[in-house]
Length: 340
Image (cartoon, rainbow, N blue to C red; front, side, top):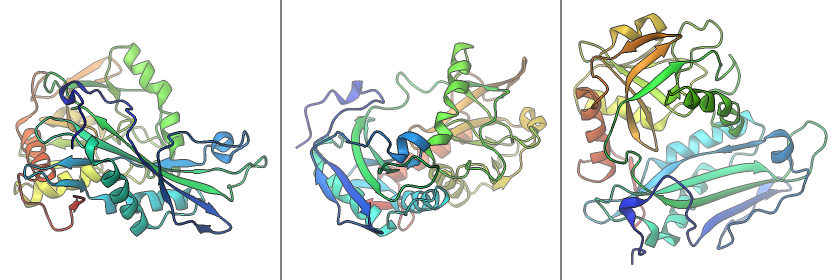
């Protein structure tokens, strides 16, 4: 039975649900894991995560489809990305099959918090992994904890979709051969000052350039970017320091296989921005956030799609992918994990 929650007025914040999943790593092995009702984490004051930021996370959602199934969208991709991140941070990867199984367990345990179909709300799922034992010397932890909590969240766009404004900042997001390609907590910590600074100056987000040459578009602090050319090619920047967004990879597949468009991953010189007709950010939270304008040190680049609505191609991509997620459009094999 669905909880008595005002689904239409939910924001994007934490609401406690009944159960979360916990597994601990000690003496070289993960334990069997368990569901718990306790939302608190007790840590040693010198825990590695607190001293040296040895932590990573993922984000995915559970949806109620048109025919009232509860599904998750491509959780195996999140499992693989977390495994890749853990290896980069010298943490023991949580086994990918167990990751998907843990997602299934925690969603089943919180089924009453999965919002009804058509409400615009979803159940957000946050897996995370961190070094838990005490360290003083700079070295990896020897004990770890993997957890998943869930929280119902409202539609990302309240009152309709309005294109946002990005600025090209003087800050860098990721160093060459650094950790830009993995979902490490430290990447987000170093983006916080830049996003607060952008907000203080009236911008919605930062469009980061590659830090080596500062001539090529990469991504924002929390989302990949897609562009649409005047001849309707869908283009996304290619770089070794961009996080491989599951939403972006899914959208590129949708562009090619559902909409019959050419989808290209390539380097995008910053001078090319004024040649595109549409731009959008993509990620789990909003799927697609249209961009109306980019400001490059005082120079305004306004996309032809404008500041009022999603561009035509962006809208088709959004409608198709959300249709797949909600069960209105047939999904490619393996994209929807049916929970209940």
